[in-house]
Each structure stands twice: as C-alpha cells, then as structure tokens.
Amino acid sequence: MKAEDRAGLRERTRRAVRAELAELALRLFVEHGYEETTVDDIAAAAGVSRRSFFRYFPSKEEVVFGDVEDLADQVADAIRVRPADEEPWTVLHVVLGEWEEKIHSAQRNPAVLRLIESTPALRARLHQKRDALRGRITDALRDRPGSGLDPFTADLLTACAAAALDAAGREWLRHDGTIDRRELIDHAFATLAPRP
Amino acid sequence: MKAEDRAGLRERTRRAVRAELAELALRLFVEHGYEETTVDDIAAAAGVSRRSFFRYFPSKEEVVFGDVEDLADQVADAIRVRPADEEPWTVLHVVLGEWEEKIHSAQRNPAVLRLIESTPALRARLHQKRDALRGRITDALRDRPGSGLDPFTADLLTACAAAALDAAGREWLRHDGTIDRRELIDHAFATLAPRP
DNA sequence: CTCGGGTGTGTCACCGAGTGCCATATTAGC
DNA sequence: GCTAATATGGCACTCGGTGACACACCCGAG
Image 1 (cartoon, chains in turn yellow, red, brown, blue):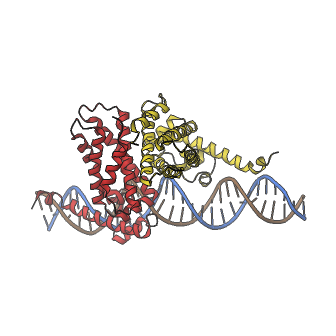
Image 2 (cartoon, rainbow over the protein chains, first blue to last red):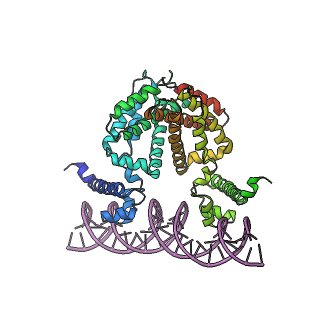
Image 3 (tube, each protein chain N blue to C red):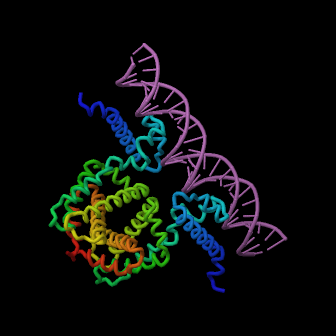
C-alpha cells in the first residue's frame, strides 16, 4: 500500500465528488441555461447541501472553469524554457499553441464553449482568467535570459497573442468546431507577426 | 428657450441626479474601496433610498462606467465613414485613437482607472464592455464598401487593436499618467501592423 | 473497547446585489 | 384646480456567498 494511497484517499474521494458535481452542473447549465440554474438546483440534484457545494467550488462560475485552473505556472515555465535566441512572437506562438490544445482536450465539449460564449457572466470570468494568465506570460517573456524586452513591448506582444487566440477560438466556433484549431492559430500568428 | 429645455426638463434633472450620485459613489469607492462600499452606503450618503439608486443605475458596477455608455454607435459609424481605400488597420488606428481620447476626457481621473484596475469585478465589467464594442467594430469594419474582409480577419484585426489599446492603457498607468497616450497608441499600432 | 481528534456534512443565520409590487408624493398638462 | 403620468420609498423576495455551530464518521492511541 503506497504512501499516496493513504495520504491521498481523502483527496481522491474529494476529487471524485468534485468531478461528479461539475459534470452534473454542466449538464444542467447546458440544458436549462446558466442563469436559470441555481446553486440549490445543482446541490439538490447531486444530493448534497447547498453549503457543501461551496466547499467544493468557491463560486458557481468556477464549476465551469475549475478543471482548467492552474495551467498558468506550466505555461509560464514553458515560456522561460524556450531557446534564448527565439523571437518573442515565435515563443508565444509555439507555447500558446500547445497550451490551447491542452485546454481543449480537457474541455472539448463545444456545448460548454457555447455556453460560455453566450453567458455574459462566464465570458467575464473567462476574460478575467485570461487576463491573469496574460500578466504571468508577460513576466515570463521578460524573464528569459537576454530578452531585453521592455515592459510595454512584452505586454503588447502578449496581449496581441491573447487576442489572436481569442479570435481563433471564435472563428472555430463559427465553424461549429469542424475546423483545425491549430491551423487557425498559425494563420492568426502569421497575420499579426509584428515588426522586429 | 430651446426645445431641449422644454422636452427634457425631467430628463435634465434625472441626468443631474445621476451625475451627482455617480460622483458621490466614485468618491466613496476611491476612499474606502469598491467592495467595501455598499449600495446602501451610497444611497444613504446621497439621501435617497436604495431602491431609487437602482432606478438610476442598473447595477453597482454601472456607476463606474455609466458615463461612457453608448460610444459604441459613434465608433461604429466613425469606422464606416472612413475612406474605402484606407487599410483596415489604419482605420482602426485612427478611429480608436480618437475614441480613446473621448473616453479619457470623460473619465480622466487616474484614481478611477486605478480603482478599476485593482478591482476584479470592475475589470471583468470593463472587459465585457470592451468585448461588446469589439463585436460592433468588427461588423463595422466589414460593412465598409468593398472591404472584402472575411469575418476571421476582421475579428482578428479588431481584437488585436483592442489589445493594443489595452496595453497602451496599462503602460500609461505604469507611468502614472505622465506620458502621452496618443504616442503610446501610435507606437503600439506601428509595432503590431499586420502583413497586408 | 473506548476515548479522543481530525474531517466532511447539514442547518441556520446572515449579508449584499438586484427585482417586483404597491402606496404615495410630486409634477406636468389641460 | 383637477387628472394623469412619473418619481420615490418601502417591503418582501430571490440568489450567490460566508460564518458559526452541531453532529456523524473514521481514524489511531491508550
């Protein structure tokens, strides 16, 4: 019996409950709409108390984004690890392209994306997350050895890259997910490539 | 006695009350923080009922952004009115540059900008507004005669331009507002100028 | 086996944002 | 001055979110 089994038994069941809760909630959201589904509805459907719901998720919105959470550190590290002579724009292209795949492998359901897109509160939350990530990426870009990037340029490039991802996502939705995301992203980054 | 005076007597007093309410609220927000200031506080300080507050502002957040409201139509029209042979990127540069000035002439107070920047709820709301505006601009860009812009490219350029404005705003804040916004914007647009 | 202590859960009370409803005061237009 | 539209206040309610408390459970130590 390995150590992690003992130490992580509680953690495992917790994750399981959390996942079950999230799945159920997402189903309700997609079916009846986000605003129309109350936390009480979710809790009741899951057979737990309203209070317990908030012990698993800090907020109703977080149910939708909870799984994606802490990719930020990984992305930032991935950027710092890129070759020093690589152009910042290329770094962003490569790392964010990979990151995008991770995001959508975890959350592939187009219905959920549509839900986010059509719910102001969720869109706002998404922006918030993206914004936090943007800040981390900007710092990471400047942390690269010999980058010589001033804060403004780093910020500018990162913001533009984020915009590219965002636009690619919307285009992907316009095609009902029947199009290759990677190609869209490549095209977007090629179109916007800044002056050296 | 001009026509607007007769037709708009109620409207005028309403605007006055609204402005007074907003000014008071902003002072409280800056002084004590946004989250710490309840709607009851504002209403009580203004000598009106909580209910009346919500008749002037649809939400607490809107107090901060209310004045800026319906610039969207003006911006969209300004874009449609640009010469047909002007590059989309140039159109965005010119129109958004002017729009930026209008925004910050109405809301010049750097303390308020800081308040927004440091309050997640307000940042989220700002993003939401910017997002709506972005959609309008994208459509306006494609509406130009002979634009020949596909939705994706229009979306991409607009999103990138919005990112440029955003980054310029942050840089401006980094310098405590002691720098020329217009120059920042020009520089940002020059840096990001997309391939033709 | 029993006695704790840590942990998960439910319940209750509370807060703040926002909304609908109704009674009332104010004011515009005849 | 009278009537009707409008502005306001008060009340009750919903919903998201939090703190406090009590209870049940499971664990290892004695």
